Image 1 (cartoon, helix red, strand yellow):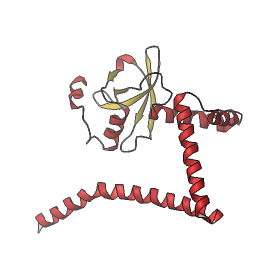
Image 2: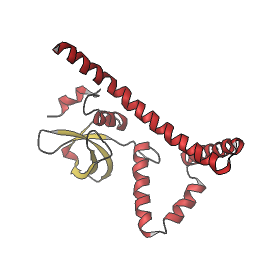
Image 3: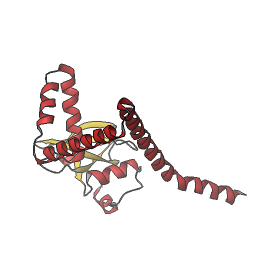
Image 4: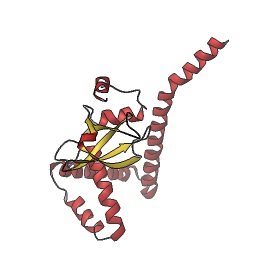
Length: 191
C-alpha cells in the first residue's frame, strides 16, 4: 500500500510542470480572448476586428524594428511626454532600464552573472551585474524562485567571482531553485 501511495505522489509531481504550463497557456488564451471580445464587441464587425489586430501587429513590429535599428520616433515622443511628468518619469526611466537589462537591448556590453558570498562567508549566490563604477560592482541579487524580487548591493571587485552563465541560465537556475545548473564545474572556483 505504501509503494502504491508513493507511485501516486510521484505521478502527481510528474504532472506539476505540465499543469503550470497549462495554466500559463490558459491565462494567455483568456486574456487574448477577452481582448478579441472587447475589440469585436466595440465595433461588431469581423473585418474591423481583423484589421485592428493586423494594424496593431504591424505597428508593434515596426516599432520593434526601429528600436532595434537605433531609435523610434514614436518611442522618442512618448519618452519626451513622460519625461515632463514628475513622478512618472522616474518610474518609467527605471522600468525601461530594467527591461533593457534583461532583454539585452541598448547594451554596449553584455551583462555578466557573478557569484558573491551572501548572507555570510562561505555561502554563494548568483547575482546580475547591473553596473560597474571603477573597481566597484553594482549587483542585483535575485531570490528564488522569483528572480524579479531581490535586492541591490555594491561590492568591491575582489569580492566577486565571475560566472560563465548568461542571464538566461542564471534565471533558470534561480527559478528552478538550483535544479537546473549546467555549469557545475564553477563550484570548484567558489572557495
